[in-house]
Structures are given as structure tokens and as C-alpha cells.
Image 1 (cartoon, helix red, strand yellow):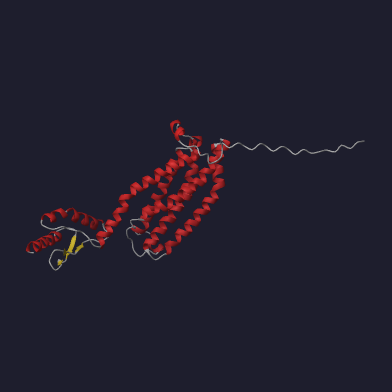
Image 2 (cartoon, helix red, strand yellow):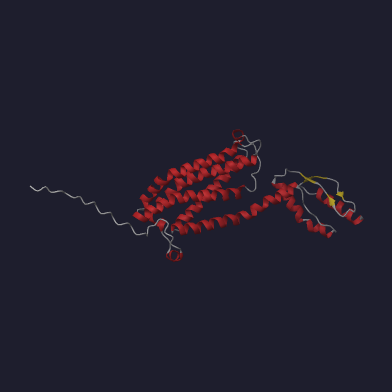
Length: 303
């Protein structure tokens, strides 16, 4: 019993000496003193990086306490929130990699092109990065607080990047397929790469613009919600759709396709041989025979 009490007191003194700790409460033990709870108040807020560093530092020192006859657990609301925030951040690179690789594979098969899928993946990543940057600028750094009715600046919720990528990947690929499939269809039938870009934008641009404005209105309505998390999610989704549809889809995609010209619709020889030819545009279907002109019967009057 005395050894346990001594260990707990030593731990309390050690915690109080940490530069990130403001207050250490007296230990609270159970009946047989086999378990002690020591409340630690950090000198910074729960969302500060210094608090996260403090939690990691205390956990790194856990084996030291174990040598003294005890096991140290860092728990509580703040520590749990840090753990929950760390899981999506750790999984995000793998999630992005799998998403981009699958997009590259599927678009390569659909369009039989290597440059078009790479362009689509880069455009998607650009729109996501722009949306996350704008969300951090508004909600975390405190700009436009009065306009959007944000009570105070605070960190963006940890699962927002995963949610943003998961929801908007489908929308971004839809806009890409709408535009580029029309371009490829025209190119397959005419062989004119420049005219294919013009026809693709002319035939699909209004559909993409209308669909994007609808989604912006849907997501943007969440900005008027009183909950800061809902505000940030709605703002991020609406801003991403705007960037992806009008900056990437309606501006960068036609410009890049015009610069690439006929090179956009080719595959390296080795890749062409192993890529399935699904022929979405039906370019290899036999063309219908031209209709024969109707024969007009002329009546000849006998004189």
C-alpha cells in the first residue's frame, strides 16, 4: 500500500513539473488503492497543438511509470478527441491513393487514354485542395466570421477531408465523364480533336453547369445552420463543387484538351495491347446504309 501511494505521489510531482501542465489535482484512489485517477489540466486549450504534444509526451513516458510498479493510461475527453482526430489523418494518404488509382484505371479503360485520366485526377485533387484551403481560411483562421455568422474561429473537424473526398469524388468524375465522353465521341467519328473540344463543351456544358448550381444550392444551404461543424461541411462541399465545375471542368479541362490535341486520345503501344476495348462511343459499330431516295413515278401522257 505504501509503495503504491509513493508511486502515485511521485507521478503527481512528475506531471506537475511538465512545462505543458497548469494544474495537477490530488489523486483519487479506489478502496484498495489499486487504481488512482490524477486529473491534469493543461496550460493550453483542448484544440491547441501544445495540448496534443503534451498527451503524446505523457504517453511516451508511460514505461517509466511502469518501472516504478504501475501502468500509466492517458484518458479523458481531450485525449479521446486527439485519438479520434488522429485516425482519419493517418488513413487519409492511403484513402486518397486508392481513390486516385481506381479513377486512373477506370478512366483509362473508358477513354483509352493515359493523359485524360491523369488530367482528371489532378483536377480533382486541385479542387479538393482549394476547398480545404478556403475552409481553413474561413473557419480556422477566422476570416468572414461576421458574414457567415460563425461565433468564433476553431479547428476544422478531423473527418472533413475524408468526407469531402468521398462525396465529391463521384461528382467530380461525373462532370469529367459528361464533358470528355462527348469530346471523345466526336473525335472517334470525325478525327478532329479541336472541333471535338468545342462540341463537347457545347453539348455538355449547360448540363454540367446546371447540375453544379443545384448541388451548390443544396450544400450551401447548410452554411445557414447554427452548428459550426455543419457550417464548415456545407461550405467545403459547396466551394468544391464551384471550383470543380466552373474552374476545373469548364475552364481547365477544355484548355488542356485543346493544348493536347490528338495526343489526348492515345495510349502507349504496350498499354494499348493490355487495355480492354469497351468502345463506349460505338465507333466500331457498322454504320447504317444510306437510305435510297424515293423513286418518283412520272406519268407520261400519251399524245
